[in-house]
Image (cartoon, rainbow, N blue to C red; front, side, top):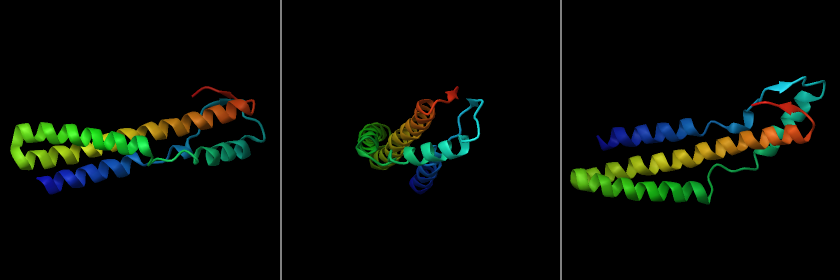
Length: 119
């Protein structure tokens, strides 16, 4: 069971890593320079890193909570499974937050370039 849970956690992390830098917001009347400006803003958003201190802290904290809960419910094996699941969920949450921040960076960059950005 632990092996299946670990594989599932890894799959969750990989799915969470889909880049927010490829985000294409809805823009009214984009104009002739839009593709160039969008590419520039997408490249700029790549400065926001997925794996940073916040991601590590989220992973460690939820791994600890998951390990404690797992130990309470299922002893040693439960603690390992809980820690693995908690760590993956915490890291996944941090990765999703970074992805949303990249989207925001793109939207703000385009807005500063004079585009009417909606979402």
